[in-house]
Length: 384
Image (cartoon, rainbow, N blue to C red; front, side, top):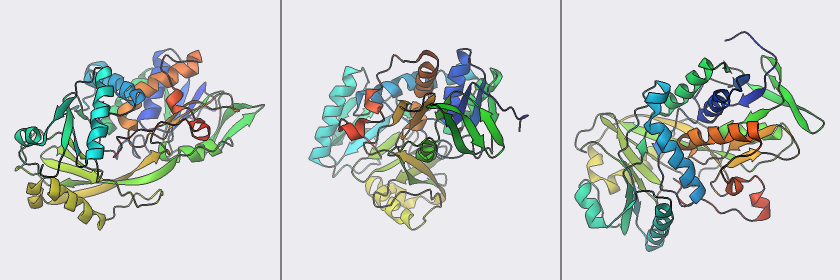
């Protein structure tokens, strides 16, 4: 741990990719008196436990734009940050079983192409030709973007963290924020398990714990934590590499290549919100059922290990980004509903602009905190 310093210009609550990216972009612009406060170790919670997907195939234009910019950052990440994040642009293949979902796909493609996403529309026969191991008998079709893929989320967060450190940012791990001091309608600093820090700006990028941090200043945000489980097979040769990120939309099942093996996961839509990150091995049976249905050869694969992380989910599956009213100096970027890793590079830039300039060139109205009570929320439909 570094020597304790009880003041900062900006205190960032959360050491995942949102926190490290925000710190880096602030420091890059000359605001170096920044401290990241992480209750555990950097990128050990949602970021480090994510599946690492990076895609531009969203239904909401704002999400497309967030990820488009991030893809360009990930493409040059090693050159800019000196860290190999193993970005594999093997593509994302979305699969639709029902006519309703297929029509949604086609509508989404029109939106994506307006923003120059190089997305392809594929028939079941074309899917079978390109990925012969897939069962396409129940499919209406699919969409594929070759620029999409995946990367190592832990290394990406550490790349931002190392660059931020070089620019003067302090990083305090195993330091939990237990309170936020306010006075006269504005932020005055934070209370931590290691002592107070006076700061005129506090940034809430605490992910699944983001709603709890917001409550420290008396603000209720509709963000809930949900467990997401991921399983990894032993080396498996029958499926030729590279394997794209393949998403079966109706059952919310996905799999992709991971080194010599296959990584797979699925959302449990019946599971209530919680901070539980234990692996439910009985759930694996349901995952395997979907896996073997879509790629029958996976019946021969052996599971090596499993892990669970947390999504921070909002009612419309879009994040809450921006300054929050009534408490000057309090900013947040939470509720990414599983898209936080891939959008972290862009959101960090946006947060730095909001803090230093008071505005950003990015239209944040789809991510406004009060959109739910106003009834203007337009959600993201492509969520797994």
